[in-house]
Length: 274
Image (tube, rainbow, N blue to C red):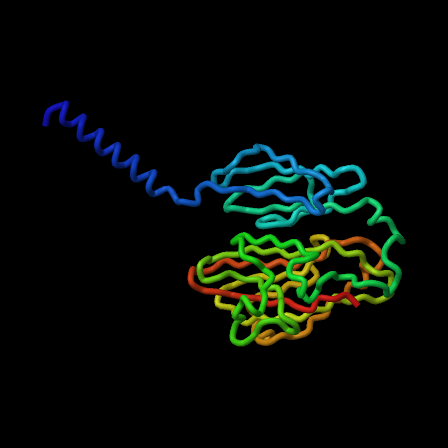
């Protein structure tokens, strides 16, 4: 074989390998990072580096900057749940991150709602859809389900009314990270309980479901608890230590990672504080 022919062959091989590398590059090697703040007037987020897309595993630095009259509370979203500010994380998927702020007056002792007055958890039965709640889903699925649009699972849908919160993956995704939260002002009373109805109609893949106050887990359940929640069951969590007029962020968090084609689901309804 001549030198010229060998060069041509090598060039062809290298070109083929290069194409193979490009073709073999996973379609999700680059990801989009979506940033949100709540409430919208609470502040802003600085991001470094600030780019349209990030390569998988790239590290970013986040800083929440509150506006006058507001204080930073915490970060929440896909792959992040911390009160550290500024903070950093690595991007491994298309993600949405929310910076939560609260008014500085709302965290002052003695300025909460009068004892026994008003609805503490707003729209706790989800009959208003996503009103008063902020939802963040890694898969982008709507977490508030309407009985007219959703079929439910094995005849289970809402515990009462027509709407409920659905945490879980579909068979299309082998993962999900979903957060549903709202800011509430606790009453002043000796005893207080967070109550809700919970069902786990499907548990094909491992998952974790948590209830948090200001990022502190109050309750954690997994697929191993599914037999106890084959139908809706009442759950009561003692939150008396928080009943001092403080403003907190009530969060329900779900995470799953398993096999493509399998599903798990957690249904939530009737959230109240008494």
